[in-house]
Structures are given as C-alpha cells and as structure tokens.
Length: 154
Image (cartoon, rainbow, N blue to C red):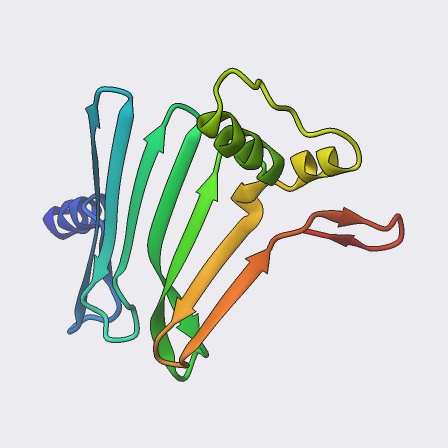
C-alpha cells in the first residue's frame, strides 16, 4: 500500500519509471513576467533520459504581436539533435508592411490596395525559421492548411 502511494506521488511529480532499477526524471518548468505592455514567457522541459534532449522556449509579446524562439528536436530517431525555431506572429505580412510605412509617416494612414492587399492573407504565425547548426542548414517553412476537397493537409 505504501509503495503504491509513493508511485502515485512520483507520477504526479513527473517522475517516469522505465524499469525497476532505472529511474528517469523529467521536469517541466515555466514562468512569465510583465513589463508595461510586454509579456515575457520562458519554459523548459528537461529529462535525465539520454534519449530525450532538453527543450527551451522563449516568447516575448507586445499586445497581439509576439516573437518566439524555441530549441526543438531535429534529426532522426537514431541521430537526434537540437535546432533553433524562430516565429513571429499576431499579424500578417501585409499588416507588418503597413505598420512600417505608417511608422515612417504616421499622418499617411497607409493601407495596402489591390493587388498588394493579398499580403494581408499571409499569416506570419505560420512562417517558421529553423536553424540547424548540426546539419548546417537554415530552413524557412510556411505551414499551409490546404483543402483540395479530395486531400486535406494540415
């Protein structure tokens, strides 16, 4: 009975038992603080298992805009390694262009007109910059939801 309670406490604390002799510890920790209109969030996931790489995430938000950088798993199952993922979100490419133009001249109240207003459909939160120092690659990924009626991608 006492052993069962101890196992329940270990599971609640995020401790995963892989066998009777090996104990694997995993800890997930996160925190945030706010400075004026800026919100800063930091999180980490760390495990004592040699197969699990530590993951870190840093996000800074200003109103609806955010910049997120994360250390993510990359590579194959046999050869895992870490890479850096960077994303900007909360706006569109067109909205960002309009913002910078209006920053230069606030009295202009510039709005993209056709055909350039199509840039308002390009969501920056779907755009990801993936820097992989192990493979020496930089990838720009755009996550597209496309419904072709006979095939759906996500």
